[in-house]
Image 1 (cartoon, helix red, strand yellow):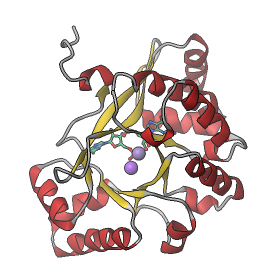
Image 2: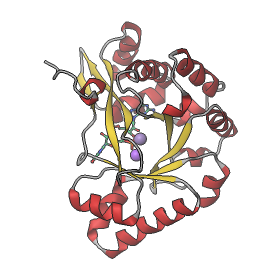
Image 3: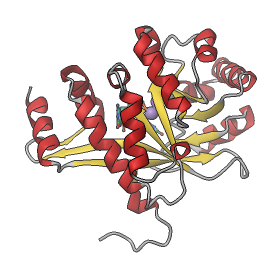
Image 4: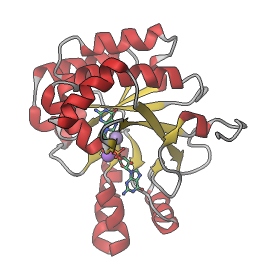
Length: 251
Ligand code: G
Ligand code: G
Ligand code: MN
Ligand code: NA
């Protein structure tokens, strides 16, 4: 309740909301330039730092995710001139995709900032599969049609079937960090990630491994054939200014 009230205030007054960016690095040189995932951050004057897990959940439950999502998209678009030509992934929740006209408005905002849609990837969690909602499907198709790429996030935690991946216009998938963690535990985990990668390959999907925390994991994931790696080992989420080359160090 307090989170809801404070979040409403943040949306009206427009401060305390920020977007941080975490690098998504090519597994092998030549796989392309570094990309970034945009991650919402909120510091409330009353509550201090609130974890995105908590405030996104509240925003989802109260419908505030819609105005919050538009606010965050504006922030990302403004930051994208700092991130020069890099591609940025934006998380979009099922509630957002279930609101009619979402893709149209999303596209209009991006274009109004003079940003090419191909520079933006939309990440949707695998949880959308359970919703099996016609509007979600339409909005995803519209986003893809308008030139955005689509990634299925948290892959392996939900119920996405091979059928779903082929029916929907996904360009890539992000292997959940719980699987990445399991590859160090032995053969079982390795086999699982290897088969996910094999499946994605066969379907011409690009593969990001999430939550890479050490060199050993990075080495194994490269060997297995992930295209991109993301995790604390390569960099924690930080403001766009932190990723600008040759920028003066922030005070
Ligand atoms: O940043 P962190 O990994 O703590 O994020 C926690 C959760 O919040 C993740 O599941 C992430 O997808 C979600 N999240 C972060 N930023 C956004 C955002 O801008 N929009 C939506 N819908 N979810 C976000
Ligand atoms: O659900 P989604 O994948 O969008 O959420 C990304 C979340 O994962 C963010 O909250 C981010 O802070 C977190 N994250 C990113 N890299 C790592 C990592 O190496 N380890 C762990 N434990 N979390 C990570
Ligand atoms: Mn994500
Ligand atoms: Na994820």
